[in-house]
Length: 90
Image 1 (cartoon, rainbow, N blue to C red):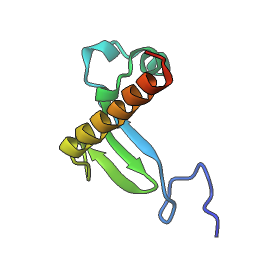
Image 2: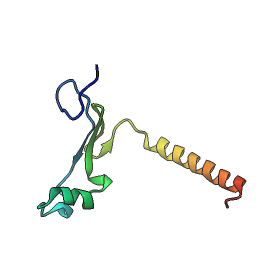
Image 3: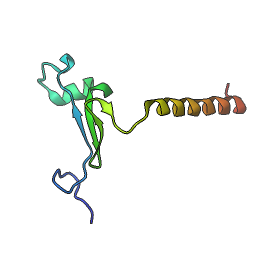
Image 4: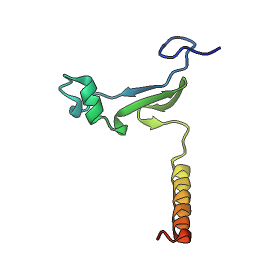
């Protein structure tokens, strides 16, 4: 059974972000869409729900190991530099 798109109700999986609008940069909030388009930054997203599963709550990413993410990113960058040297780009 395919879930309907664009509906928020019991049984539907959702992708949602919640934005903390308390920051002074969003005020006065006369034109909300404009304020979000021009001023929204990643740190303003307080909560993220992907396919009905909470991935970020109150600004904290859930289920992620920050040390592992850094280690994996550094290992990937090492491979990029090695490949760049091997191909003569550097």
